[in-house]
Length: 117
Image (cartoon, rainbow, N blue to C red; front, side):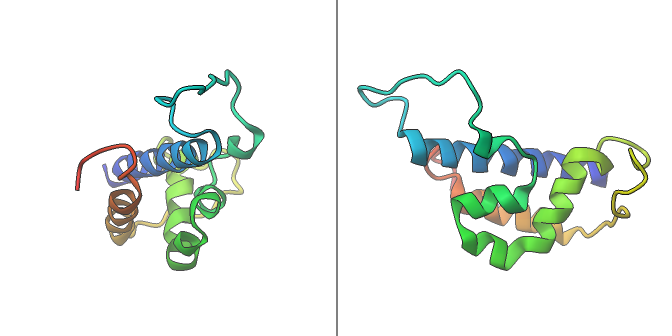
């Protein structure tokens, strides 16, 4: 279950980083004059949490690069499948602290979208 749990943390951060980038680029959808964009911007067409987090705040990468890489792996293959998809992915590593770091990052950056503290 640990890989599946870590995968869900990765999904959460991926969606959060994409939402923050979108909010910063296009402003709040509740503001007058906001226009709906039906296409995913090219900048967001990745599951790489290191790249996505750097678009939000480079300090995240400086502090959590290894954890973000591991979360990306669980999001794209190791949390989903029992073995490597192509044989060239990194080995599965279980490090429970990654989930703690994901919670820390989420809690710090979710404030524009929720009142959870």
